[in-house]
Amino acid sequence: MQEQTTKQPETIVPSQLTVKQPETADDTQTDVVLDVQSLEVYYGAFRAVKDVGMPIQSNKVTAFIGPSGCGKSTVLRCFNRMNDLIRGARVGGRILFRDEDLYGANIDPTEMRSRIGMVFQKPNPFPKSIYENVAFGLRVNGFTGNYPDAVERSLRRAALWDEVKDRLKENALELSGGQQQRLCIARALAPEPEVLLMDEPASALDPISTQAIEDLIKELVNDVSIVIVTHNMQQAARVSDETAFFMVDPDDRAGCMVEFDKTSNIFTNPNDERTEAYVTGRFS
Image (cartoon, rainbow, N blue to C red; front, side, top):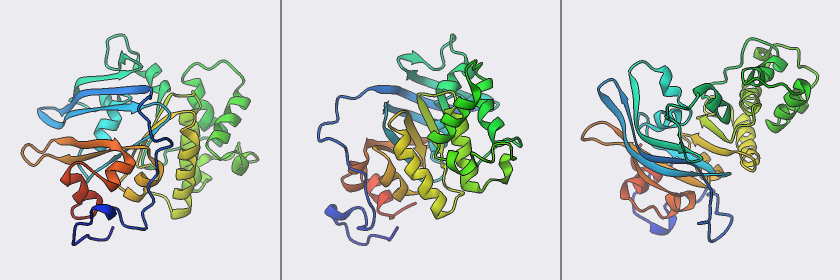
């Protein structure tokens, strides 16, 4: 992003940056799938994230932006309890998934992760066939239906079927990086989750593969709610409906959410001067 030397309120975003516009002028009547309330995350005695609260809307793309180390991925991992796997990690506050506390005693994390899927920064296919990679996402959740049909459906949803339909028995590691990432998306989609978490899903990919992932996100959001962490602000502006900006509080080094709003507002009319400084490239 080019550095802004003079504040231009009407052109906070450089002219080449395309910002996704809201579908309607009045978008207040929405359905909350994840309600984040006073979220804090600790690693041992260190508070890594503090005071995060926001509603994640159904069938919308929500982007998390901010400098490295500000807690974006930490918050994302809370949404399907991946932080449970980190020794010494604990969570305060509440995250409600369809009004049910994600950290409640009655929650089965494995079953919950079938409803809130995750795609990581680097493609991580299993060293198995393309077919078995997708089928795994079904087996682990006790699927008893028609596997070939379900695998095909997931690969089609990930825009990969036409490229691999004659290669299903081949090792998934033989695919290109972009294809591997779409295979991981297909695997996450196999249990038909309500929410898909994406932690910098295109950061390791070439521009053509990145475009394919962005196009896929725009299609998938019709059926699933998406939360994406990205360092690419152009990407956040292109694909997301709402954006949360995070930064590190210099007083205690904890990550915090500075602002949460419609993406068009974050990039063209932010409320907080720190948000404006970040999206205009005055600090990173």
